[in-house]
Length: 365
Image (tube, rainbow, N blue to C red; front, side, top):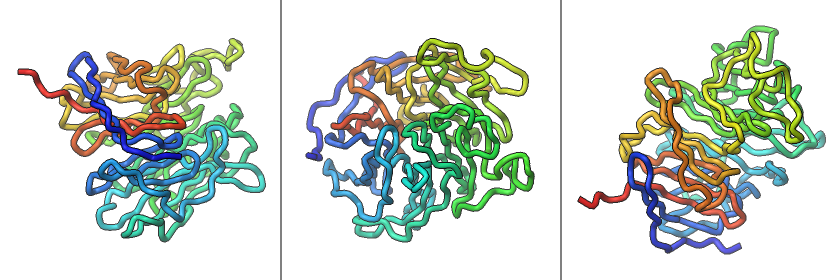
């Protein structure tokens, strides 16, 4: 596989509130899943097939050693990546992946340090693995969001078995919350109780593949796949149930109805939903300096319709507008991140995947 920088000129795109340019920083990536920005401005990227690489000055590194063995099949593989808030000094990073085992596969989360020469991971330690493996190869969830106190929120899908999303003693179909060392925060809704597993934050999620925390108010935000329709934006609250598969705005791929309708007592309504499905891959809350007119907006990477969706919110967090950008121009968007300078980073989920940078076009005045 050839890993090369891409020298094409940036492409211009109009949008409702700003003129945009998109440049390709690298191509030849194998289904890249997650990107983060290192302190010196380089990029570190996971590939679903199991490699972790660094992109610096347009050059893509060889795979970093010490990455765990992964189940790279279907939707499984090496998945999300998150850097410690103190990465500049502690060089700690977190990875999620589909872990193979004798009973099948399940989502796992580990922490490690990036060696000074950037060629290997050191001090690798798994700090979470889901409690029930499965032979199925879908709905691993996996996005990570790091709270202000350093604790980790992450999602796991129903693993292709709907009923698991309603079982409080099953990690599947959940948003989970653990400390950076793998211990359980005492403030979790089921901590110290027998109602559910202590690391579970919320239940009833089909496949949450986007998660972020709004740096302005600390609010947790997720986006998750529906079936045929019913993709959802949620603000998960501790101990709440978000409905899947009891309530949903989607239908089965066969066209059959799912569950008991779109609302029922005891189950939360989504903050927003799509029908038909856009197949969301990731989500970021925009709080950058480059696009002040996007402040507080949600950016959603979409796989099926191959676009970036911008959702406008009011002061309460309610979604009041939607803009769809780059429809089909680059392929399936897997990840979206806000860079330190306010530019937006995108990964395309292709065998010849790209790392793209979206930034403001210079004013013509």
